[in-house]
Image (cartoon, rainbow, N blue to C red; front, side):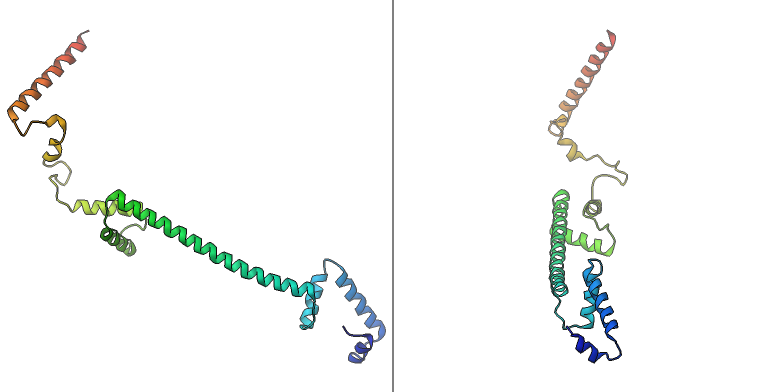
Length: 191
């Protein structure tokens, strides 16, 4: 801090009253809680080498907090990326198991998703991809779904047991069962 003699030497055209007025203003500014910090910041700006703990310590603390905030932001981003990758892997595994897709088929599907040929969503793309795969597999059905009867699928049902071994006996047994069912239905209507 400069003494009054140093101020007179440095500013010869200022009289003692002007110096006293400046000192009074400085004391009022530094003494008010509303103006103290801006006043000290101005003083620090004019005298960068001046040691002002209130300003210097706050600046150090703010720098440390900024570094901490950057580290926290980086950690939050890394966690969000990890969570996203895990959700994506879970959706991919769900698609693989639900639709019976192989790793090669998943890769083909993802390539088509990147090209925009399939929706970029693991809930919808596998369904469409699987439908396209299945539609390219020959079936015994016509294009409208009403073609030749799927004999192998039908024969697996228990009501068709014995059809291939002895068609005549199966037909007779089935016809009698149908007639019995119709008679039972007629008896129930009569009462």
